[in-house]
Amino acid sequence: MHPVLGKNSVRSVVAAGGVILAGICVTWWLASPRLQLALVTVLLLVNILLTLRGTARLREGSTLPGSVETLMQLAKSPGIASIHDSIASSLLTIASRKDPIYCRLAVQSLETLALNCQRLAMGTIEYPSTESWRVVYEELLRSPGLYLYRSVSFVETQHYWQDGPGRQSTLLNLELHDKGTVNIERIVIVADHLWEMDGFISDPIRNWLDEQHQHGIWLRVVRESELAGESDLVSDFGIYGTRAVGTQLADVSGRTARFVLCFDFERVEQAEETWKRLEVFSKPYRDILDRTNGSR
Image 1 (tube, rainbow, N blue to C red):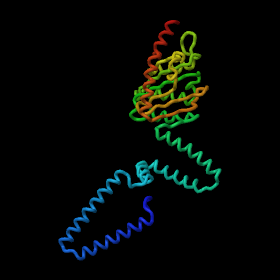
Image 2: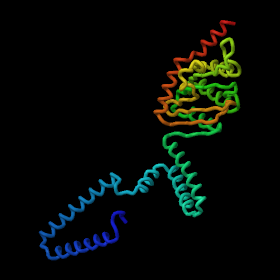
Image 3: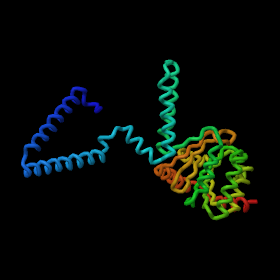
Image 4: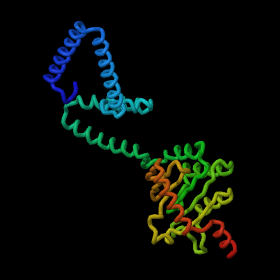
């Protein structure tokens, strides 16, 4: 039933419709053939006008309840539609429970779920305290159409990318760059305590950089202290072409504390601007090698 029309209104409309229909029948029975033809013409015109009006309202979505429109949109994505059905079924079960403490706790959990859904709707996926993001990292780097990967590495500890998952990611970079599948460029921000007195970087980070340099990966390096006036540049992120940008936060042991992947073009553009600014402060790794080797 339409929310605006009450029971009395519906009865009135039905009664009025019956009277009009009866009048049309009597008129048709008593009318001449010419009048009957005119009456048919009028009825056809009214039917056409009502059809056109109904079609216009359907296009505007004004006659469809929001839930119906939602289901029609979700039907275009079978995977999402299936999840929607599962969640809807669970919500009905939750709503049927009467314990007030349970209901309050359930609402709190659902609010968190709703916030996560909002983040997903904005193109953001978060991986907290886990290295599982590296699976998606490889999937992105191997995805068709990706030809440029730009990485900014913020190295605060000598353990940076030195564990098993980190080593696998390094080997993946070397493999894809050697094959010419993906052009890899990397700017490395190195904490001051990891620089030696001779102006070079201590091991094992030095070996990590040397290996990439030997494979022809484009490398630039900058001391963290040289960015003191540009603190917003001190970050760890990767730009996957124009598709996505991933930001990593590592703990004191160099392992991932949080990784956020964002499939939003504006965020990609912002990361590109940060990259361009870092290029101004950083130096080619080759130049550091030449200077250091020349002084020995």
